[in-house]
Length: 248
Image (cartoon, rainbow, N blue to C red; front, side):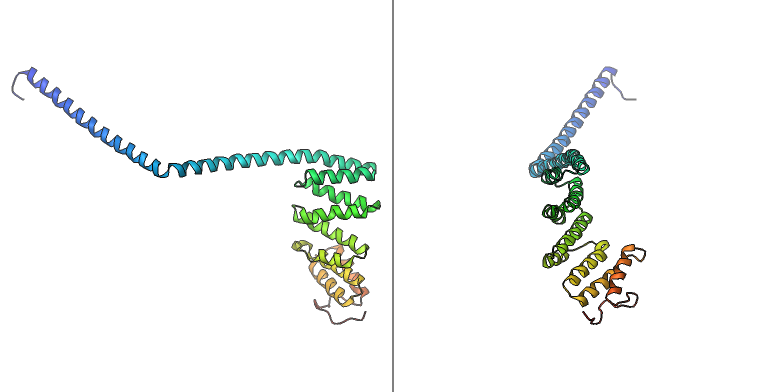
């Protein structure tokens, strides 16, 4: 046991404990100060960059949400005009059909409704003597449509109208465009039609053979191509992709 009066020992122990506490407090203060200094240094070095990154991320999120909202609004409003197109088609009013088709194309061209309306309207307009308006609608989808399937359908229908008008060069120019693989056979068949109308039987035969090879064996359309080849004196089951010269 330590010697000396209990009061002296107690005061000494208290002093030592207080001194230790002060030393630890100073040590902790130094560590905290070093950490604060490190944070300040880091922020001074990279604070602006971090701020710009955060701003960019927040702007991107806000922009994406805004884009999604805009698309929903566009689709909703376009659906109203599409209903108007359908009503005008049912009424048989050519003027209303032409106007409604043009309206949805000009106001909501980025929507699927606009592309569908052009395809529906073009058929009606062509059947009712408005061939130029039908071509305009189909050309718009072929060149500006967002969906490659709709673009291909519109282009093939446009080519048919150009063929009917004997605008062969314009039709072949449309056929020079790229078609999705699933439309390759249809495009080749249409090329054969144009070439045949020009009297280029050998080239038409080659196009028909290519179409026949591309189309599904179960497709009724393939049977139509076979009939065209038969009319040219060709058996597609034995024909080569690059045919021998045929007599015109």
